[in-house]
Figure 1: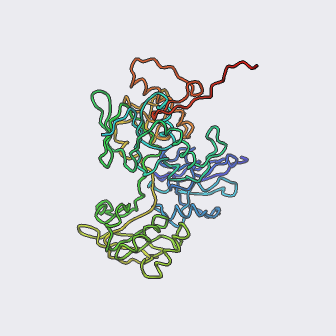
Figure 2: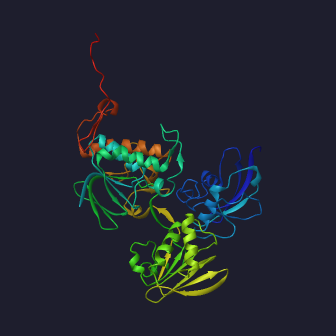
Figure 3: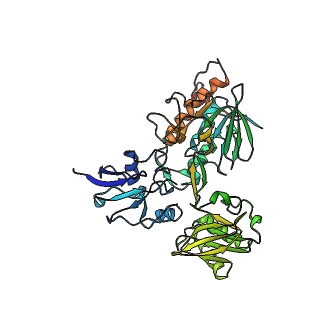
Length: 110
Length: 350
């Protein structure tokens, strides 16, 4: 469909969800997880999407190119737990046509 | 023991505004907050960020909103217990409550409003085996009394302002300060970064980057740590490890108060007066949940207002109350001050 991309999100139980996600709703990946209730409310997006907590941390599983990390995102990922080389904060990944096909897995709850 | 009518747990925007609405009803308030300053996440997380959805303010910095709220409630003389976490609650036979903090401060109140937001801010703990065993036996998350570290070997882990600032401070107190960070880049005030560089050059701070703490050692208390530096491990002898990885909110002890919890929030009675399943305990702002809940500051203000009307009925059973407009009735502060609209004069003009 127009203005929709497919994303593959693996929840904390290891179940992968393939979703058609709108690109014209000004959403980010953390909000997608909340909207589709892929993680219990209160365990994701706690700071509201300001890169100030790491509750939306996820691991990027394929080579879809993402925008560079901001200083804020780098700083948070340098303090959070369970960080790997492919860690990103979901709230900093905007849902745009360029990230179609992205596959991520949610990091464990801190 | 601190005595008050309404004890508010959480001094964020919702808790602060509740003092105003309570004050209009002559209800005296006291607030507890785990942070050492008022304002909750507005002060702790984003004081310099603008908020655009406060009615009447096209744009206001979070920190300024807190300052204004404090200005708005000051004539109602709220009391504060700051830097202490509400830990234990006891309901007395007469329906009143005693709330005790982790520092042992006791508060007696006729009603409780939990305005705890995301929960209390607690240090983010690294994932390490036997971490709990070493807490207070060498692993410290705060520097409360720097003298404790005099002539000791201290390892600080972290890359933000508090890791930099405490490394600088303890460089002149401790026998040895080692600063470990996962990356080569530090994020902090420029002069702090430069000062650490200078102390490193002088040999007063040992800097190890990129590296992570991997293991803790010691029979009775912390004696050494293993660090992982680019995949190779080595031990560092130390008396203290201070992990400074920022703060993260946790619902904390309130979760064990017998309140109904749903979606990591406190369930309330569907927007009637935001009372919980325990009579006399209310939950307002981001900490509560009910069908249609929105976690917005302006919704917290509304919830605080309705909650105060209900608390009035607990404090004054059977008494009739008519809601008054501040424009008509003015505000009588508990400090004897009075604010009111200027009266129009009735006078003939010659």
